[in-house]
Length: 437
Image (cartoon, rainbow, N blue to C red):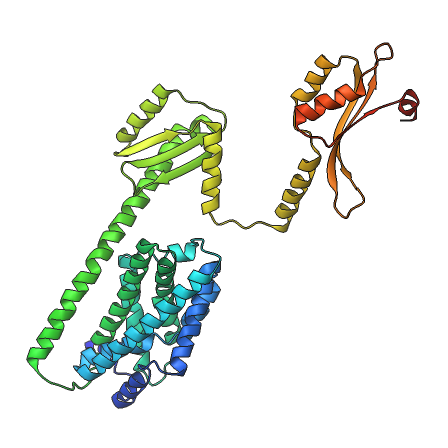
């Protein structure tokens, strides 16, 4: 029974000739001529995909990228103790990395669009899940390479392990001098390279590829070195995963606090910002109509600790101008797609603004200073002089009291001074014109 089960899962079934596999691996290591051009083009495509936040474009770039070659070559070299091949693989991987960083940095430097999109942001904080993806993706890749029939796994591995996007994100960090993005993305790239290489090493050892040098001393050194590097790579990723878990837990607790203390009581929340990576952690809220006293805000801050949200400060934004600028700033950070209808509405509002007299006190002041003025009509119209351009002119139409006529010149001078504009015309309506109307 055990023999049949072992045969069922045995990787030697369907295995290609070792000499042929090794020859194929070695041929894909070098970055010269066409390979280098393909890599540069793939980097440009991936950078554009990250720039415009297009997942489909990024996937396309990963499919055509030849970056897997030297990484698999390094894994084969370690598994067979072929140090000349290891040296060649590392050299070509360094060439590919430098070329990729240079091309992506140049692209993002000249690109007018430097907004941080979600596809970029997702590559700046790797964790243990990225380690698992790289390792198991590498396992699939090397198993597929050693088969007689390669099948579909190879393109899938290129997508899953995602070597291109972290490099492009690192280039974005260099181009914008955002070194936290650079180090986070480059760390993800190193994780992917290293664990694909380690997965390859394990499969090569399992399939018993012949060693170039059979020396127990070298074998022990390589194993110790690999074990040390695995720990060095995994420990930071565990920390980042733990930090991500705490952040998700904190966000969930904050949402529960807001729902229980505000939403359930009918408070209409119009602004929310949760800052986890600050000390103390911050919760900024604003409500539509409700105003809270300082005492109430203090009591809510005390309640946060009771709810398990220690080292957290609650701020309620109640200053209208401050709130407006904060909301606009937050909206600028978010991804937004403006439809054609929104653009048309915005343009119409701007056009209408040209013809509005937005001064509610003007008519009241006019009635006080010129009580004889009646039937006031006030608005802005386009004036077409003998030139190609147009100007906006304020026109005041009125009918004065028959017993006490209005001094039109005096009224016009007052309006010019009051509105700080000389482009004003004051017209008196006649009795017959009123009847016609």
